[in-house]
Image (cartoon, rainbow, N blue to C red):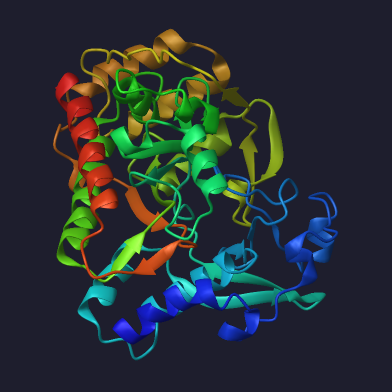
Length: 402
């Protein structure tokens, strides 16, 4: 383990692609790039990831994230030393003969890694081939949260340090930053999206309500998703408190939960197919499954400095014991416009739900973004601080809505 982890540090001193056996394209350092519209024909069937909520986006930035026809995610290798360091990290953790208990446990908290990929048309453009943790969800609610008390690594220039501090001066005090999120609203079958400016506007007094928006579906707070998220963050915290080999900077947690109010994705999908009045052939969840589904819109929210507090309706729909009939009424109300009927049905079914259904709740929390991981001989105090404060805020959200 130590020999492998030291290689992560050496990448700073030997940024040459040859150090990790990768031939990086000149395009990674600022050359010409195809636009998003031209991409699919050039990228061997791959398409830009439609449900990305933060980070470099393909067609906008020099590097970005794509989705492969097999459903995996392709993360374009960043310029050295960041890209090679992230590839080295994944290779170290997922090494075939890995027997380090620390790394084997860490695998449970990362997307699965399938090696590198490049298009036959452009073999010098390297991508990390990763699991798409949103793939099994019908209406994935997604949030990207950067963790730690600082978002620059020890090798960053003074200019870089000042730039990162200016972006979010409260990083040291709060320990995490919401980079982006999208939330499914059951009443009108839409996603509300919040970008990095929303997260940077959150201060200590508003961080709880700002984070609670991610778990509110327009009718009530998804307490089951909050509870399941808390358990998963606690597992990650346990890993960090038990290891003193790696330190993470500018790394994130990706939260995903099922927004559709149903414990059965298949029955929910068939209900959706029957419900639409205006139907289009759309790529279902960008996972290369063609289905006829009602088209939905997205609202973008930025610079919300005073996020409102959401109050749950009495007897609201909870967890995974949501009834099939309620789903029928919910979905049919999307297109019919009878939101009063929808809300009454949700409230009426709420008493049948169990508060503690988180064990079965469809939730994922995974660590992502490892371009700034370094070997260490002590605990990662900055990341641990961020995890503990994040847990405190999540628990406060749950308590306020008990």
